[in-house]
Length: 348
Image (cartoon, rainbow, N blue to C red; front, top):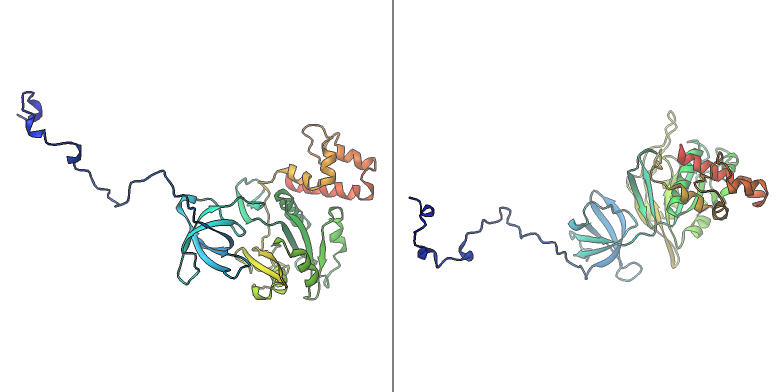
């Protein structure tokens, strides 16, 4: 008879046993038991991401001090899959000495001031984060070879306005074609514009606009973006390419986004180079942000009926009424035309 079937079996042989005597199966992986308590990382140090390459982050520490250095870091497990991009301000632990072979860990990301994003296409709500904390965007476009694409520039402008970033425009290769007709499309935006031709750039004028700012450079391949960056930051040594004479398209030379320091005496700024793109999806954009970027028109838009799209076919739009009444002066027609075109760009 089995012992558990006999109610009269004497329990005395087991009296000396308690729970501590029970054999516990060891953890097969040899890991410590999981806990929901996470370290506070009170000793984490601040840094700025300058570039990302295959899961490794180049981070600047102690900027503008005698201890300034760049280190290599990886993502801490507790951050999960949260995107970290060039320009992010982060906190790090581990070996932050910057010595060869060392690797720190990024444990948190500071709140971002701005975020430049794009999607694969206008129907895709999944966004791709390009740059964090930039406050300016320099759109580089060629007057010819390759031909300027007004709609692509419109898309850059929409993305900048949506992110709260000030746009600038640089037209290269003006020795090949007159950019006047192209620039007329943006007359109502009051965008600061630089012109360059025959391989020379107004370096001093552009530098003056970039100092004290973090400026992201955008433009499709072959427009001279990398050449311009090398002129502004000679130590950058960004690869340059040529335009295919058959297709009229440029060859991609920048494969990753990277921050480069621009210096002029004791003043400095940041130039953020991005890979050339031939499309810029706006599936993530909030159209209200476009209107708010036209500060003079946004104030008038408060008089619009609820749900007004502010597009050319919008009935009873207060902005259109203000233009007809001449309340915006000589620039009114150009301003509303630019607004309408950007809203149509987003909607189509």
